Image (spheres, rainbow, N blue to C red):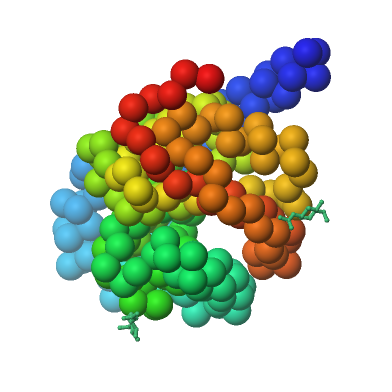
Length: 243
Ligand SMILES: *[C@@H]1O[C@H](CO)[C@@H](O)[C@H](O)[C@H]1NC(C)=O
Ligand SMILES: *[C@@H]1O[C@H](CO)[C@@H](O)[C@H](O)[C@H]1NC(C)=O
């Protein structure tokens, strides 16, 4: 019991630390220092007068506005790294196995929750799946939009497959599962990739959080060198089961 509470407290403080950090990053990206509104005016003015003599930023404001990397460029840079490819390949083999289970097709509507920079989305698109939606607490264009995994901005039952590697880090695992399960159609599936090789108790614990789905498959696999467990749930009902 104490261990459980301690873990909850740890999670909560981690969550708030993350929120604070993300807010700061967001503010910095949005408003490069406090001079944003006048930067344009001042710049065009000073540029015509002094640009030739002054190749260096005239103030920290000028420097900040130069340093903001356009989202597309940031993503392209990331996409060109070996680490990115390695992780995408790991996901490709996961999705290949979901195809062989008959849970994924090119025409599937797929939702990826807590998608980070969108590695799994890249893997899906590369394999020919056309309709993939990715969300994360902060947006990461062009593949990932901002949305809270605990409160997904989608109607019930609109996806064929819900996929996430974010369950282990969710502040409210029950709510996290409830939301992803809600957005999947009856007959569709929710697939969680959880850290570590799954023990029977661990898998049972995750399975119990689902109220409209049954366990279809559990698989050990490695994602980018780390041991993971794939828990595949199939939605059999649209009505919440009490258990
Ligand atoms: C899915 O799309 C990819 C890319 O367009 C294609 O190569 C593949 O054959 C398609 N798979 C099926 C089963 O149609
Ligand atoms: C996954 O690995 C663990 C540890 O080796 C093992 O206990 C478990 O049975 C494996 N699960 C599956 C589904 O293979």
